[in-house]
Length: 110
Length: 156
Image 1: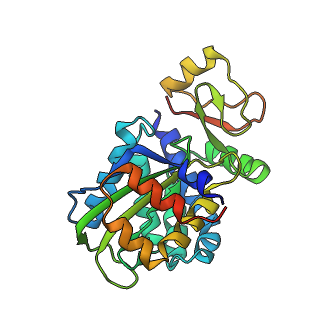
Image 2: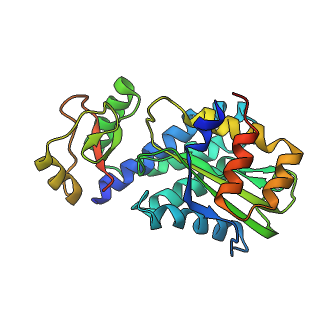
């Protein structure tokens, strides 16, 4: 997996955590470190090339989840099957591909 | 959430009644390793980073000897729960500062079909608030016993 894709996965994981912090707190969990996570998010985003970060933010604003896993060639954003040829290249991770149906960036799990 | 729905997120291969960990960091890694061994997760480092960040947000040691480390990650495709038990207890920075003996690690994808992740967490918290159930869980030695307790505690 490319370093940029790995950074994007980490960034989205942080964004999801920050986004759902209030929901999780309502369930009874102690939430005290939102500011620390926001700081970590800023530091992480600085490591991502600007065009890729812009692409991520744009997709996130439009679709909520910018990057989704692909399992058994199924995009777990829109649940549409991806072409087998795309999977071969996607698994190599040298390039970041998008789902032709929903437009989200794809991360192959297998 | 119905009892059958919650129980579907447990997996007999994600069951560790004799955890060896002695620290919080080791406990997170030991439970996560179960997911890696079953190929539910291929990039352990990314998910471990996520779990550690989650602990920065606030300890998932919810008190009464229970921890529910959890989080969404792009590096998985399923909402799954691993169960672990450590009879000695581990210092997990729990809110009541008591050692943790029962662990429920919940890992979910960014976008889960049916939006079950938060209801799964909520159902676990509800079950584990019951002192009798906690006592029963401390005696669990098989996956079937675990499922029986989880199912028996849920309202249809």
